[in-house]
Length: 182
Image (cartoon, rainbow, N blue to C red; front, side):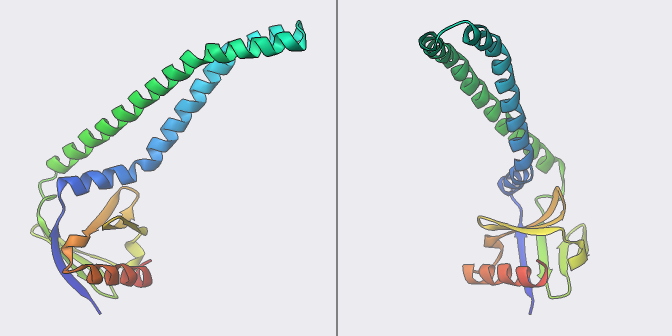
């Protein structure tokens, strides 16, 4: 059994791939940012808590906690605004970088001919061909209407659903790749 089809990777498809491979990096950066912000706020308010808790009664402590929570509201709003700015900045920088990479690759928009058999995956472009065996494949990931066959952490073969004749053939290809190469 084998599959033989052709297709072209669009700039939008390439950008989605870029976001997919940088997702873990973005999550780690955002978590580090949150930890740093929490640490800064903890350092700011800890001396206040220690000073008042040691020298006041229970009712005064509840009153102090209430005021400290009110004092935290502007910091929390600032944190949310700054977080939104960081997320938006990361989104647009990733978009810009992936467009730049796609446009710099002269062969990225060329038609690709795929021949997938039980022994290997053959990819042919007008610049040459490449045979990939199971040993070369790092992992296979299915995301929405796309199959990503990762050869390295940031290098993948992209197969879109619209490259195949119909949805049934696409689903059969997914099962076939899972069985033979997964």
